[in-house]
Image (cartoon, rainbow, N blue to C red; front, side):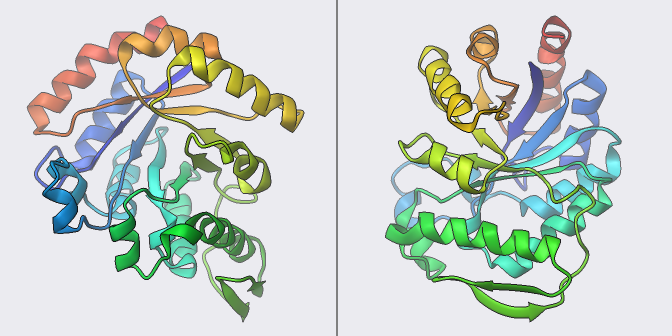
Length: 268
């Protein structure tokens, strides 16, 4: 099992590029950034941590990491695609993939904060069909010189949109979530599954069931892992675990990375 890191790239914390350099030097294979475009004040008043509304845009933050590293895989964990225009997002993904030398992975989710979704004009009860169409539309943009798409939520005809991704045919799309229909989504329009907050003993049968349905090895990246879970996650069939890094100033975050670097060697 490979190890990576995941965190909120907060505006008053360690610079994303500095964290990327430290992660790569320590032997971690990936760095994923979370996002929220904003948090409604009414939701924040309920005790939600300030990291949710103090994050850099993940594409901008990961672009700085790409320039500071050479081999580190870069990803979103997760990108709220239901809050983003698919044409603009397709171009951002392709740009980052090319500028990073083909190291980007797109982890996506439909979102849980209904008020946040509504501020983007998204009907929370249609968010999963919207996410599917936006992924399918972006794949059309990435693979067609003159891209067209006709759906319930997304429609465009014969558009020219470059650059195209460096990875062929496009960066891996990792579907986040734990619901009963998440495997349907992975098999229909994803390239891998990104679960979180599930005990390894409960995760193992779900990974087996997913791969049996697919008839192939579906990659699984566990998002937000605790160090004490790693052995059990590996036994459950997880391909890559992303250790959750508490956001904070450089000295605290770099100390965390250094303390956990020995885990990389132990799992090789």
